[in-house]
Length: 375
Ligand SMILES: Cc1ncc(COP(=O)(O)O)c(C=O)c1O
Image 1 (cartoon, rainbow, N blue to C red):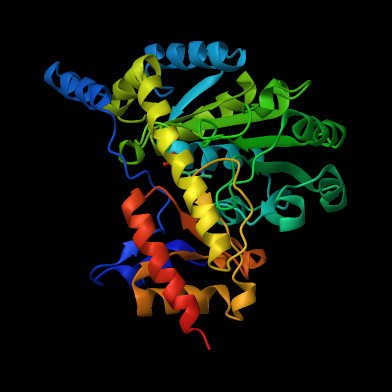
Image 2 (image 1 turned 90 degrees about the vertical axis):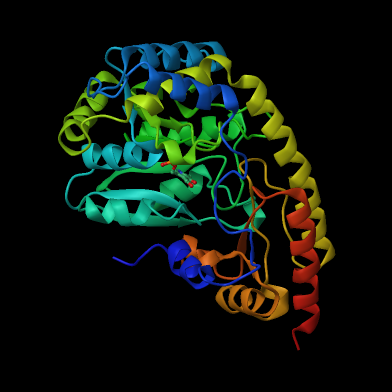
């Protein structure tokens, strides 16, 4: 199994001075103060124990209320919600619970780096579905039908998407849901960037007709509340699937950190204002990044969500890797070659705008200089 393409590239960055990194998918904000304060208080109170395997019931109740309030989604906190060590663990558990040896999993590409390798670890076969700029990097019902066979067990959908920033309207999702039901597939829906949807309301896959019983809904705190280091996320789904995932979780992870769980409760109760402030800033940066990219000759569609732009470098005549390496060596700006997200990412870069506005401005001056220097 190959190492993550993002990590390989960032090993190069380590040790270099004055690099502006637009590489990592991590908010540049620190976790809002009220959330940090809750964790400090939890420690002062002596909350240092394990929790139940499924996670604190108070947090599961809070998640249940939050999803009901926000999307009208109904999950029973006793049986249908599992607290995990980030969406990373929730995703791993979903695949381990669902995938049988030899069964295949549909993965629209370019895709987040762990989907393919974790599918393989579970003995499954990743089946990439190519998306293109013409379709806004979105998968269509026809693509899904074409890629299905008797062994197809599940599909992974991530929206807003890492690395392309693409997202789906309700009607686009309905058309996908129809195929998922007809082909009797399970949908593993990674909605970690749901709160960073800029142009329309986010629609959770599980809210679509007949999808609740066949969807594992994954979400977490890393992106919405700038809590990457807390390692906390959750999975919601039908009781039989959550029970299977809980069995694996109890042997491998036991439970997520109690301190992070208490902080997460505070995020859901009182974090909305901070979330909206961060979102406003990401939106401002998105406008700047997309207009600068198009200005300097790297065509880029407008991302509908998350904090990534996915411009094409094809016009420069360089491959994704040569462009990224050259930019790093000559101008000390780190971006991720599109190929880190699958071979279908060739010709593209992933640029994270979870970086301060001033740094973005400087990075684009350097990038423009680099492009002009290409023979
Ligand atoms: C699409 C996607 N899913 C999952 C994760 C992992 O998130 P977590 O920090 O909750 O493990 C990331 C992190 O970058 C991501 O981009």
